[in-house]
Length: 338
Image (tube, rainbow, N blue to C red; front, side, top):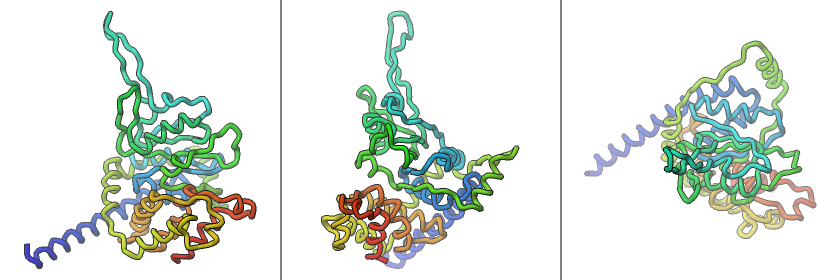
């Protein structure tokens, strides 16, 4: 193939990629509109949750009760046409209650065999409500599902449906009877989404819309197969060297043993690992497409720094004693690339 033919092929591939990205962006506008008709006043939460799904990851939603976290998961399942299930985590919840178990059956007299009965984890969108109330044993079972997209029961592996996403919720106030999520499990969540109170206008709209005779019902805007195709497309979106460099600079600046910032070395006990860099590489692409752009910028890195980094870091006793929060620490690291 001569040079002119190679250039023509490259240009055609680039044009095809641009057309696919623009079509996905237009489709995502309809998805956001469909969610916005059900969930009011949580634009940032909706955006971050969509970024999680389109990047192929899991999200940890943290907020007090009554802010629509369960309603959001149900709406996402309907809008994306996904099979969605919910589990209520409690201290007595066992791994078999999530994964499933083998039961002994008698097909005919004298012939017995084991049959695997699938648990609620066999869903495309799983809501783990108040995940920190589950015991460490149960949390570890969910960890395998999140990481490997399969579960092991009685020595046999069972693949999970595709796509597979976990949206876990956690109450930041009531900590009695809870178990801290291990660092390994926190790292598996692509984003930590903080769900706050809606503004007055949004709360007024929500109050009127949800207390009448008729209520809006979410409609499918995108299928599960289309979501998988979008996830593959997003990985093909190019990321400029300046953005790649900014991601590396930001993540490494948050590690106390490698940070050039003396303040962070003093305030951070342990920092984000390579999964944080990978999460940013995927998430910035999604955010750019959702905003109608063909390539991510450093603004996308800064916008997603907090939800991607805050659950992958821990503060020292000095920071806690001085009243320094994680937000201030990440803001300080962001100033290095701003």
